[in-house]
Image (cartoon, rainbow, N blue to C red; front, side, top):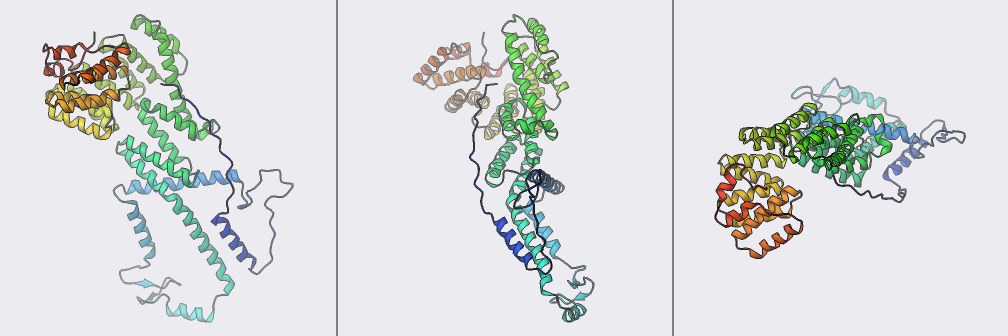
Length: 499
């Protein structure tokens, strides 16, 4: 994992604004002063009070108020989640509309309408009160000042709904993002939450912790591939002062898991650099990580990685990955692609498709779902399904190196050389690992030569040579006519090899 730079930004203190809320409070105070009775002066901040000063506008302890607001907002989000969970196929606007219509309907039967005063006597369709209540009102009219209290109540209700209206989009969008998570569209859910975070930034900095915890769970599902962004998210929304609080212990555990992964990488590098064999590595690595509290699943991942680099038997790699599955069963985004890769090396294409389908249920937007389907179908001789799998994946991740690489191979097999050249170029330009770079460079060079793009091919050769790498031998064998494209990409491993 690459080392990150941390930029500390300082914000100037915000200027105090005169809000609509304070204007309404002043109007209510004026109304109360006009009421009959003795006026009792209040002093919310007596001079001898050594406690935290109360808010001059609300007269409340600001820390206590913030805690209660957080609890209230979490409660509102929880109720909204519950309502949408009970009506998963209903649109939120329809639920609200039904609630309003139900409250407005005072009918006990199909045609019966009750008096709005006593609520017992039926009245005519165009009437509001029954005759008895009307007579009582005529003899006992209201005292004018008593009307002030319902007016105040209505004003407060309207004011509270106006503030809730500002916050409501955040609550409803959070429900929508959670629906995407349940549907296995984890990448789309992450994008939806990014939009929510941006909206909160321009409306209100405090919406409770529930929507943040939802994002923590989402990042945890995505696993190692999202650790860099996950770490930034925790640093931004859970600084050390909040991370140590008891109700954020789950977030702290995730932060420790990220730190464990980075420390294990350093341990892996140190041991690998002084080991000649996998056995040497295993012995030294076990000693280095023993009793350090590292995540057990991540330990087995680095053992698998070492076994792969040292060229160990496929059985050794499978054992390590199956241990990841055993000790970290929720880490599906990590072990399912590895099991699919191992099955591919064993030429067990049915298992490749099985693991790809399991991964699709967990995260339907993972590029590995479509990558392994495409390879399995291609090596099984079904180019139509292989092509469809690539297209499905590219619709989700159009610049993904591995998917563009597979699409380029399929286009060559379908004798679409011009299209193959374009996909190979995209794969080469977006390669982000040594293995993907070498494979994409070999495919790009082959396609460039088949298309007669001599200058492009020379540029590829120069760049790859500068990095100290070479091309797969099969490239020149195809150009010389010693090997066919069909033999290379449909037989054996079905891909380039390196000595």
